[in-house]
Amino acid sequence: MLEISGLKKEYGGREAVRELTFSLDRGELVCVVGPSGCGKTTLLRCVAGLLPATAGTVSVAGERVTGPPPNMAVVFQEYGRSLFPWMTVRQNVELPLKERRVPRERRERLVFDALAAVSLDDVPGAYPWQLSGGMQQRVAIARAIAYEPQVLLMDEPFAAVDAQTRAELEDLILALWQRLGTTTLFVTHDIDEAVYLGQRVVVLSASPTVVLEDLKIDLPAERDQLSTRALPRFADLRGHVYAQIQRAKGAR
Ligand SMILES: Nc1ncnc2c1ncn2[C@@H]1O[C@H](COP(=O)(O)OP(=O)(O)OP(=O)(O)O)[C@@H](O)[C@H]1O
Image (tube, rainbow, N blue to C red):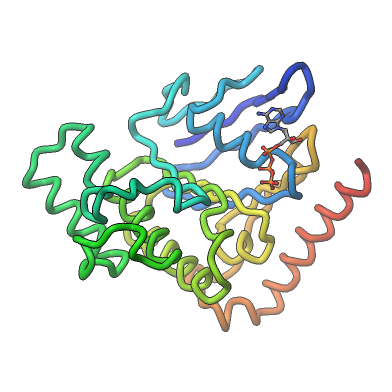
C-alpha cells in the first residue's frame, strides 16, 4: 500500500536523509522512531507529497507520489495550527469532504460518525480554541478518518499533550485502527509509544539517515496501557530499540 524506495533528501547540497527503503502492507500500523533531528519530519513530508525527494520514490497503492495524494490524510503534531480557528468542529471535519465534492447527505453522515468515533459528537458547534489540546487533536483525527484515506500519516501527533491524554489518544488510535484497518504510518521520537502502537517499528539512524532495523513487534494484538507495558517482552523490545538508537548516536 505504501512503498518508500531509496528515498534521499538533501537540503542545499547537505545530505539529511541518505537512503530509506521500507514498505507497509495494506492495513498495517507501522511506527517510525529515531533520534531528534534524524529526518522523521523530512520523511513524512516526502511521503505526503509536500516535499520533493532528491532521489528515490514513494508510491501509494502503486501510484507514484508527486504531490499530495488524494487517498492520504495527515495528522500533524501542531493541532493548534492545523485546525481553522474560525470554523466550528463540524466545519473543520467537513472541509476536506466538501473539497472532494462528497454529496451533502453522505458528508453529514461521515462527519457525524467520525466525531462519534472520537467521542466528540456533543461539541460539533464549538470552535477549536474552546477545546483542550487533547480534544483539538481528536478533532484533527476525526477530520482524517472522515476523509476515509487509504493511508494515514501521523507526525508525532501526541508530542504536545500531557501524559494521561497521550495514553488515551494512543488507545483511541489503536481502537480506530482495529475498527477501520487503515494503513497507518506513525512517526514518533518516543520509543515506548512506537513499541506500544506498532505492529512493526522502523528504527532510523541519526542524520544522514538510513534504516537501522525494521523490527516486528511480537506483542499480543490486544494492547492495554497497563498490562502490555508490564510485559517482559515489552521491556525487551523497548530496550532493544533504545540500545540501537544509542549506538547510532555514538557512531555519528
Ligand atoms: N528546510 C530545511 N533546510 C535545511 N535543513 C533542514 C530543513 N529541514 C530539515 N533540515 C535538516 O534535516 C535534518 C532532519 O530534520 P527533520 O526535521 O526532518 O528531523 P526530525 O527527526 O523530524 O527532527 P525532530 O525529532 O527534532 O522533530 C536535520 O539535520 C535538519 O537540520
